[in-house]
View 1 (cartoon, rainbow, N blue to C red):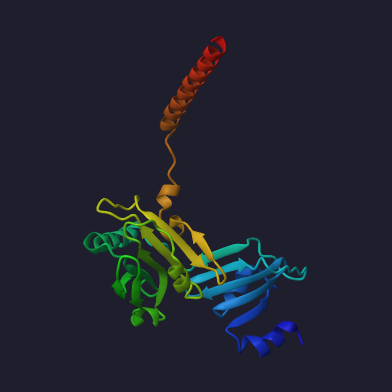
View 2 (view 1 turned 90 degrees about the vertical axis):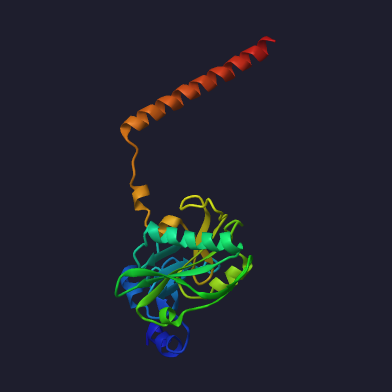
Length: 262
């Protein structure tokens, strides 16, 4: 009896974590996974994979040395993919305005969930039922989103009012070993805060550690990445840089010569 058949009968059907051997290409392999947490033996190591409707993340277990020439390799130590399209900057601006309103009115934190509706293919911002203060949030989930097959929790975000955007030890406890989605925190909020002048951090839980992700991984800011400077701008900027560097060099050279002379 093959070992994968044995595992399927004795372990995978009874355990919260299923065990698999990467004996086909990764994309086809991922489609076959049905468990939330999966242990993957690959040609170049042992990996943990977390998967749900949101997507998946695969992360190498570095503390275990393993190799198998009969199995496929996984090219990256950590790789993830979301099944949801990136929401627009309009939604990000709404999130900022919500956090800003609460901060201006009470100096407290606030927690927001962003859900993707599979049927309508739209996003819904949901302000959870919660008790808030300046350092923490106690909240409960809305069952019509969390328990529905039509909704995918895409992002859970909370504010740190005027403080820096850093994840606390309480955040680490709340957001680990939990549903697969993006987690975020925004901070340094004040009455002047706008879409691009706030502090922020985002991450995703891999099943064993938090992986940092960028703002552009979560929200659609592709127009910024695709923008290229006009040649006329480039020529002018290059000239300014070259002339400034030359002037700086001449000043340094002059100061050195004067110091030698005296």
